[in-house]
Amino acid sequence: MSSGLLADRTAVITGAAQGIGFAIAARFIDEGARVVIGDINAEAAVAAARELGGDAVAVGAGCDVTSAADVEALLAVAAERFTPVDVMVNNAGITRDATMRTMTEEMFDQVIAVHLKGTWNGTRLAGAIMRANGGGTIVNMSSLSGKIGLAGQTNYSAAKAGIVGLTKAAAKELAHLGVRVNAIQPGLIRTAMTEAMPAKVWEQKMAEIPMGRAGEIDEVAKVALFLASDLSSYMTGTVLEVTGGRFM
Ligand code: NAI
Image (cartoon, rainbow, N blue to C red; front, side, top):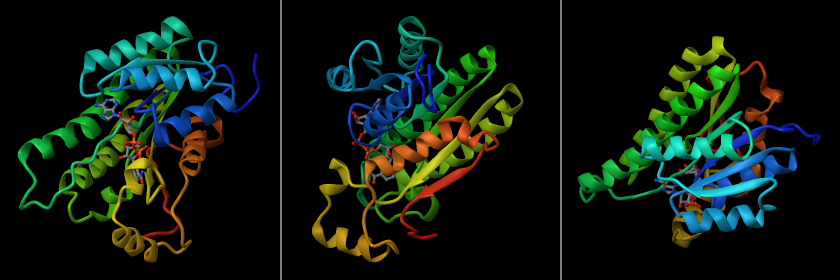
Protein backbone atom coordinates (compact mmCIF):
# COMPACT_ATOMS: atom_id res chain seq x y z
CA MET A 1 0.00 0.00 0.00
CA SER A 2 1.32 3.40 -0.89
CA SER A 3 0.35 6.55 0.96
CA GLY A 4 -0.98 9.70 -0.63
CA LEU A 5 -4.21 11.32 -1.70
CA LEU A 6 -4.71 8.82 -4.54
CA ALA A 7 -3.17 5.78 -2.88
CA ASP A 8 -3.84 2.62 -4.86
CA ARG A 9 -6.22 4.32 -7.25
CA THR A 10 -6.07 3.90 -10.99
CA ALA A 11 -6.32 7.01 -13.13
CA VAL A 12 -6.83 7.22 -16.87
CA ILE A 13 -5.72 10.50 -18.42
CA THR A 14 -6.26 11.40 -22.08
CA GLY A 15 -3.87 13.62 -24.03
CA ALA A 16 -1.27 13.03 -21.33
CA ALA A 17 1.81 12.46 -23.48
CA GLN A 18 2.77 16.10 -22.89
CA GLY A 19 1.69 19.43 -21.41
CA ILE A 20 -1.04 19.69 -18.77
CA GLY A 21 -2.04 16.01 -19.01
CA PHE A 22 1.53 14.89 -18.42
CA ALA A 23 1.81 17.16 -15.36
CA ILE A 24 -1.44 15.68 -14.01
CA ALA A 25 -0.07 12.16 -14.48
CA ALA A 26 3.13 13.08 -12.61
CA ARG A 27 1.17 14.66 -9.72
CA PHE A 28 -1.16 11.67 -9.45
CA ILE A 29 1.76 9.23 -9.32
CA ASP A 30 3.35 11.33 -6.56
CA GLU A 31 0.13 10.83 -4.62
CA GLY A 32 0.15 7.05 -4.98
CA ALA A 33 -1.91 6.53 -8.14
CA ARG A 34 -1.18 4.27 -11.06
CA VAL A 35 -1.87 5.97 -14.35
CA VAL A 36 -2.82 5.02 -17.86
CA ILE A 37 -1.74 7.62 -20.38
CA GLY A 38 -3.85 7.72 -23.51
CA ASP A 39 -2.79 9.86 -26.44
CA ILE A 40 -3.35 9.94 -30.17
CA ASN A 41 0.45 9.91 -30.40
CA ALA A 42 0.99 6.33 -29.18
CA GLU A 43 4.78 6.53 -29.28
CA ALA A 44 4.78 9.67 -27.13
CA ALA A 45 2.33 8.06 -24.69
CA VAL A 46 4.63 5.08 -24.22
CA ALA A 47 7.66 7.35 -23.80
CA ALA A 48 5.79 9.49 -21.25
CA ALA A 49 4.87 6.40 -19.20
CA ARG A 50 8.51 5.31 -19.23
CA GLU A 51 9.61 8.77 -18.08
CA LEU A 52 7.07 8.66 -15.24
CA GLY A 53 8.48 5.47 -13.77
CA GLY A 54 7.47 2.66 -16.12
CA ASP A 55 5.39 -0.49 -15.73
CA ALA A 56 4.76 -0.43 -11.97
CA VAL A 57 3.10 2.98 -12.01
CA ALA A 58 2.41 4.05 -15.57
CA VAL A 59 1.41 2.60 -18.91
CA GLY A 60 1.02 4.46 -22.19
CA ALA A 61 -1.28 3.54 -25.07
CA GLY A 62 -2.51 5.02 -28.32
CA CYS A 63 -6.06 6.37 -28.14
CA ASP A 64 -8.09 8.71 -30.31
CA VAL A 65 -10.72 10.08 -27.94
CA THR A 66 -13.14 10.71 -30.81
CA SER A 67 -13.47 6.92 -31.14
CA ALA A 68 -15.60 5.20 -28.48
CA ALA A 69 -13.86 1.90 -29.29
CA ASP A 70 -10.46 3.49 -28.59
CA VAL A 71 -11.61 4.93 -25.26
CA GLU A 72 -13.11 1.57 -24.29
CA ALA A 73 -9.82 -0.13 -25.14
CA LEU A 74 -7.93 2.44 -23.05
CA LEU A 75 -10.18 1.77 -20.06
CA ALA A 76 -9.63 -1.96 -20.57
CA VAL A 77 -5.86 -1.39 -20.31
CA ALA A 78 -6.43 0.12 -16.86
CA ALA A 79 -8.39 -2.93 -15.68
CA GLU A 80 -5.88 -5.38 -17.17
CA ARG A 81 -2.71 -3.71 -15.95
CA PHE A 82 -3.89 -2.21 -12.66
CA THR A 83 -7.53 -2.06 -11.47
CA PRO A 84 -10.72 -0.70 -13.08
CA VAL A 85 -10.63 3.07 -13.44
CA ASP A 86 -11.19 5.16 -10.29
CA VAL A 87 -10.25 8.54 -11.76
CA MET A 88 -10.86 9.69 -15.34
CA VAL A 89 -9.34 12.90 -16.67
CA ASN A 90 -10.67 14.03 -20.06
CA ASN A 91 -7.86 16.35 -21.11
CA ALA A 92 -7.03 15.64 -24.78
CA GLY A 93 -7.31 18.72 -26.93
CA ILE A 94 -6.45 20.53 -30.14
CA THR A 95 -6.88 24.04 -31.50
CA ARG A 96 -7.76 25.06 -35.05
CA ASP A 97 -7.99 28.83 -34.59
CA ALA A 98 -9.38 31.12 -37.28
CA THR A 99 -12.04 33.77 -37.52
CA MET A 100 -15.38 32.61 -38.89
CA ARG A 101 -14.51 34.23 -42.24
CA THR A 102 -11.75 31.71 -42.78
CA MET A 103 -12.60 28.74 -40.51
CA THR A 104 -13.56 25.71 -42.56
CA GLU A 105 -16.31 23.31 -41.60
CA GLU A 106 -13.62 20.69 -41.09
CA MET A 107 -11.78 22.90 -38.56
CA PHE A 108 -15.04 23.33 -36.66
CA ASP A 109 -15.91 19.63 -36.72
CA GLN A 110 -12.42 18.49 -35.66
CA VAL A 111 -12.35 20.68 -32.57
CA ILE A 112 -15.89 19.73 -31.53
CA ALA A 113 -15.09 16.04 -32.05
CA VAL A 114 -11.89 15.97 -29.97
CA HIS A 115 -13.08 18.14 -27.08
CA LEU A 116 -16.79 17.59 -26.85
CA LYS A 117 -17.33 14.09 -28.20
CA GLY A 118 -14.03 12.99 -26.69
CA THR A 119 -15.08 14.20 -23.27
CA TRP A 120 -18.52 12.65 -23.70
CA ASN A 121 -16.92 9.31 -24.62
CA GLY A 122 -14.61 9.44 -21.62
CA THR A 123 -17.32 10.54 -19.21
CA ARG A 124 -19.95 8.01 -20.21
CA LEU A 125 -17.62 5.03 -20.63
CA ALA A 126 -15.59 5.63 -17.44
CA GLY A 127 -18.82 6.58 -15.66
CA ALA A 128 -20.34 3.20 -16.55
CA ILE A 129 -17.39 1.35 -15.01
CA MET A 130 -17.36 3.58 -11.92
CA ARG A 131 -21.08 3.20 -11.24
CA ALA A 132 -20.69 -0.57 -11.38
CA ASN A 133 -17.78 -0.35 -8.93
CA GLY A 134 -19.53 1.95 -6.48
CA GLY A 135 -17.79 5.24 -7.23
CA GLY A 136 -15.11 7.35 -8.84
CA THR A 137 -14.21 10.83 -9.96
CA ILE A 138 -14.16 12.45 -13.38
CA VAL A 139 -12.31 15.68 -14.20
CA ASN A 140 -13.02 17.42 -17.51
CA MET A 141 -10.72 20.02 -19.01
CA SER A 142 -12.70 23.05 -20.14
CA SER A 143 -11.08 26.47 -20.70
CA LEU A 144 -11.56 30.12 -19.88
CA SER A 145 -12.30 30.40 -23.62
CA GLY A 146 -15.54 28.51 -22.91
CA LYS A 147 -16.57 31.05 -20.28
CA ILE A 148 -15.80 34.33 -22.06
CA GLY A 149 -15.53 33.34 -25.75
CA LEU A 150 -12.39 34.29 -27.64
CA ALA A 151 -12.26 35.77 -31.13
CA GLY A 152 -10.76 33.24 -33.52
CA GLN A 153 -12.04 30.35 -31.41
CA THR A 154 -15.74 29.93 -32.26
CA ASN A 155 -15.07 26.18 -32.50
CA TYR A 156 -12.95 25.90 -29.33
CA SER A 157 -15.08 28.26 -27.19
CA ALA A 158 -18.22 26.32 -28.19
CA ALA A 159 -16.61 22.98 -27.37
CA LYS A 160 -15.23 24.19 -24.03
CA ALA A 161 -18.58 25.74 -23.01
CA GLY A 162 -20.23 22.49 -24.09
CA ILE A 163 -17.95 20.59 -21.71
CA VAL A 164 -19.38 22.64 -18.83
CA GLY A 165 -22.96 21.62 -19.73
CA LEU A 166 -21.89 18.01 -20.23
CA THR A 167 -20.12 18.01 -16.84
CA LYS A 168 -23.17 19.33 -15.00
CA ALA A 169 -25.62 16.95 -16.72
CA ALA A 170 -23.34 13.96 -16.07
CA ALA A 171 -22.84 15.06 -12.45
CA LYS A 172 -26.61 14.94 -11.96
CA GLU A 173 -26.91 11.51 -13.56
CA LEU A 174 -24.08 9.97 -11.56
CA ALA A 175 -24.15 11.68 -8.14
CA HIS A 176 -26.36 9.07 -6.45
CA LEU A 177 -24.03 6.34 -7.72
CA GLY A 178 -20.97 7.77 -5.97
CA VAL A 179 -19.43 9.28 -9.08
CA ARG A 180 -18.44 12.97 -8.98
CA VAL A 181 -17.89 14.96 -12.17
CA ASN A 182 -16.20 18.37 -12.17
CA ALA A 183 -14.42 20.64 -14.63
CA ILE A 184 -11.41 22.96 -14.73
CA GLN A 185 -11.14 26.16 -16.75
CA PRO A 186 -7.45 27.06 -17.11
CA GLY A 187 -6.51 30.49 -18.37
CA LEU A 188 -3.13 31.15 -19.94
CA ILE A 189 -0.87 28.22 -19.05
CA ARG A 190 2.72 27.98 -20.25
CA THR A 191 2.88 25.01 -22.66
CA ALA A 192 4.32 24.34 -26.11
CA MET A 193 0.96 25.44 -27.54
CA THR A 194 0.85 28.84 -25.80
CA GLU A 195 4.57 29.58 -26.15
CA ALA A 196 4.16 29.51 -29.92
CA MET A 197 1.95 32.62 -29.57
CA PRO A 198 3.21 35.90 -31.14
CA ALA A 199 4.84 38.17 -28.51
CA LYS A 200 2.22 40.88 -29.05
CA VAL A 201 -0.67 38.54 -28.28
CA TRP A 202 1.19 37.20 -25.24
CA GLU A 203 1.68 40.75 -23.86
CA GLN A 204 -1.97 41.57 -24.44
CA LYS A 205 -3.09 38.51 -22.47
CA MET A 206 -0.60 39.25 -19.70
CA ALA A 207 -2.23 42.67 -19.20
CA GLU A 208 -5.54 40.93 -18.46
CA ILE A 209 -4.13 38.77 -15.64
CA PRO A 210 -4.31 40.33 -12.14
CA MET A 211 -1.54 38.00 -10.93
CA GLY A 212 0.63 39.28 -13.78
CA ARG A 213 1.99 35.97 -15.02
CA ALA A 214 1.03 32.85 -16.94
CA GLY A 215 0.23 29.67 -15.00
CA GLU A 216 2.48 26.62 -14.87
CA ILE A 217 1.20 23.17 -15.86
CA ASP A 218 1.60 21.88 -12.31
CA GLU A 219 -0.72 24.63 -11.08
CA VAL A 220 -3.48 23.03 -13.15
CA ALA A 221 -2.37 19.54 -12.07
CA LYS A 222 -2.78 20.46 -8.38
CA VAL A 223 -6.39 21.48 -8.98
CA ALA A 224 -7.01 18.26 -10.92
CA LEU A 225 -5.63 16.38 -7.91
CA PHE A 226 -8.02 18.25 -5.61
CA LEU A 227 -11.03 17.36 -7.79
CA ALA A 228 -9.89 13.77 -8.32
CA SER A 229 -9.26 13.06 -4.64
CA ASP A 230 -11.38 12.95 -1.50
CA LEU A 231 -10.29 16.53 -0.71
CA SER A 232 -13.30 17.57 -2.83
CA SER A 233 -15.66 14.87 -1.50
CA TYR A 234 -18.72 17.15 -1.36
CA MET A 235 -18.23 18.77 -4.78
CA THR A 236 -19.83 17.75 -8.04
CA GLY A 237 -20.87 19.63 -11.18
CA THR A 238 -18.55 22.52 -10.35
CA VAL A 239 -16.17 24.47 -12.57
CA LEU A 240 -12.90 25.70 -11.05
CA GLU A 241 -11.07 28.56 -12.76
CA VAL A 242 -7.26 28.42 -12.74
CA THR A 243 -6.56 31.78 -14.30
CA GLY A 244 -4.57 34.03 -11.94
CA GLY A 245 -7.79 36.04 -11.63
CA ARG A 246 -8.22 36.72 -15.35
CA PHE A 247 -11.86 37.52 -16.24
CA MET A 248 -13.08 36.53 -12.78
P1 NAI B 1 -0.95 19.97 -25.62
O1 NAI B 1 -1.16 20.23 -27.07
O2 NAI B 1 0.40 20.19 -25.03
O3 NAI B 1 -1.42 18.47 -25.26
C1 NAI B 1 -2.59 17.93 -25.78
C2 NAI B 1 -2.39 16.44 -25.97
O4 NAI B 1 -3.62 15.89 -26.50
C3 NAI B 1 -1.28 16.09 -26.96
O5 NAI B 1 -0.40 15.15 -26.40
C4 NAI B 1 -2.04 15.52 -28.17
O6 NAI B 1 -1.30 14.52 -28.88
C5 NAI B 1 -3.26 14.95 -27.49
N1 NAI B 1 -4.40 14.75 -28.43
C6 NAI B 1 -4.79 15.57 -29.43
N2 NAI B 1 -5.85 15.05 -30.06
C7 NAI B 1 -6.13 13.87 -29.46
C8 NAI B 1 -7.11 12.86 -29.66
N3 NAI B 1 -8.02 12.93 -30.66
N4 NAI B 1 -7.12 11.78 -28.83
C9 NAI B 1 -6.19 11.68 -27.85
N5 NAI B 1 -5.23 12.58 -27.62
C10 NAI B 1 -5.21 13.68 -28.40
O7 NAI B 1 -2.06 20.87 -24.88
P2 NAI B 1 -2.17 21.40 -23.38
O8 NAI B 1 -1.85 22.84 -23.39
O9 NAI B 1 -1.45 20.51 -22.43
O10 NAI B 1 -3.75 21.27 -23.15
C11 NAI B 1 -4.35 20.21 -22.45
C12 NAI B 1 -5.84 20.54 -22.26
O11 NAI B 1 -5.96 21.76 -21.54
C13 NAI B 1 -6.60 20.74 -23.57
O12 NAI B 1 -7.91 20.23 -23.44
C14 NAI B 1 -6.63 22.24 -23.72
O13 NAI B 1 -7.69 22.66 -24.51
C15 NAI B 1 -6.77 22.67 -22.27
N6 NAI B 1 -6.37 24.04 -22.00
C16 NAI B 1 -5.06 24.47 -22.18
C17 NAI B 1 -4.72 25.78 -21.89
C18 NAI B 1 -3.32 26.29 -22.06
O14 NAI B 1 -3.10 27.49 -21.81
N7 NAI B 1 -2.34 25.47 -22.42
C19 NAI B 1 -5.71 26.73 -21.41
C20 NAI B 1 -7.02 26.19 -21.23
C21 NAI B 1 -7.32 24.89 -21.52
